[in-house]
Length: 111
Image (cartoon, rainbow, N blue to C red; front, side, top):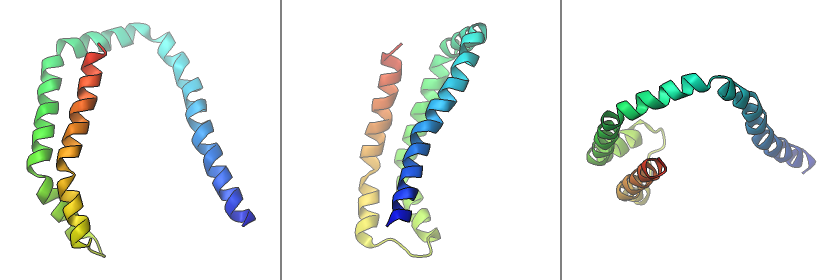
């Protein structure tokens, strides 16, 4: 019992401290390189149509080939999924597409 508590505590501490430490290490780098970040922002603004079209193509490809991806994943598993689980995974296609579209809209709405 105590071993399980120590394991869970160490995982929780690691999940909290590592992003904090990485953030404290990375933020000064971003502050010192604002000119490079401005160049990156200008590049991304210049090629925004290309990025949007690539994201749309990625979403359409994922939507069209979702059945094949799930079936290929199921075939590679040593213990195949049950038919119910496979049907749930196949029906998750629209939810995945909606999530991708929602996050894309959040990104472009925030600009």
